[in-house]
Length: 193
Image (cartoon, rainbow, N blue to C red):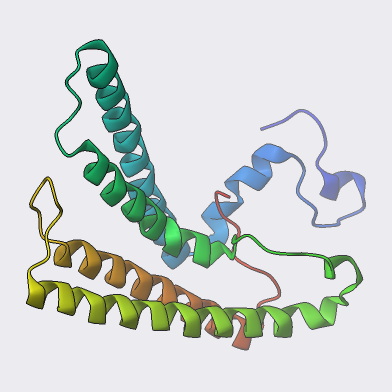
């Protein structure tokens, strides 16, 4: 791939990555589950993000150039934004790539990292499991009352059920992370992020 020697060649066998390209390709070593999660969920979130950009562009051009915005455009944007966030969640969870405060990372001993990550993943599993359950209950309530979007008249319940399912998948991914740490993993799976 490169004419320059890798870090492992120049440092006497250390296993540091040689360049950014090698780091970028590390996601392939994450195993079948990790690769499937990245391809399916991150890919879907990317497609939804592209769709959101298109809807926003057409809506803005229609609104200001032709005085004809997309009917229900605001509601479509709301649905897409929720779908992007929850759709990318399993991929972000697998990589443990959440926004974190790393004030103590520099002084944390290497032996303390796996137990810390285990408890972080346990807390995240419980919290996301609660969000999944809460969304499912809310979706059932929305289905019972027949709530719809104001302009589009689409029912709210299917959207809430999908978001609940994606939160549940995210919780299951955290559970898979927990099992990895119980089997002796020392760090999160590498990934796209």
